[in-house]
Length: 148
Image (tube, rainbow, N blue to C red):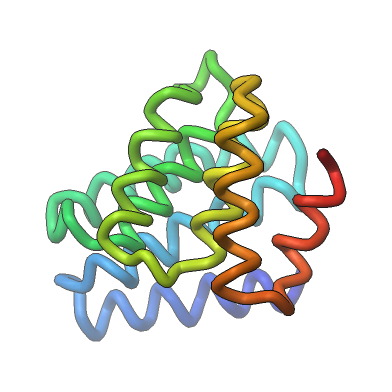
């Protein structure tokens, strides 16, 4: 938990140094999202709005940045439906991200997870296979593929 809090503090400092960095805002959104995973429902109530706010700011700064689109896709994927979660929006944003950065193996894994959650096994397999072509050593992709 201390490492996560330190990472959040560092991202906040980076934003103070360069508020106009879309990447820094999307990084902070991702960190807040991961913080929710460490703290359960109460953390969701505290950090969920922060995820949305940081991704919104990142989109205002650069709506075509692949990291921004990937972060927004993860937000839609991981949020409960009642808090804005939307598989279709997750898939659209993750696909846009992979189109803009076709070398982003991790984003292909997230796309596979979203496609699998939606029930499209073929699309999920295609995405995770692409991730493994890009980075055969990716433990994230290997584990995701094993979960078929």
